[in-house]
Image 1 (cartoon, rainbow, N blue to C red):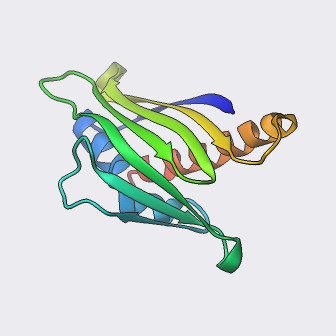
Image 2 (tube, rainbow, N blue to C red):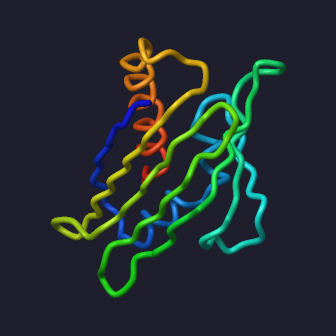
Length: 146
């Protein structure tokens, strides 16, 4: 298992950053070889279940997740979402937090614990570097204003 953290500053309001980061289907648009399906009726809430299907053909797997904390930003305060990863291959959790930052911008913190079943810990440094690159690029694309 690896734990990593990403931090970004975006020229968005916390509400806009929250909406962009938690519009689950958009994650499939920015993470390579991934399609996201929400299995629970909208709107998102604690208990919402989603599946990210990643890979190509027979080398695909499902990353099943459940929203276990859902606190959208309100009254100028932070927002926080926690996803528990409960797939057969991918395990762990992700915390996404948005909060007001300097100069009217928003600070985003994305923390994640990621484990891949059957992947020996010897590969943790590679898994961590890959995860930081993939999720960092995804966060950048989701927060992009133009």
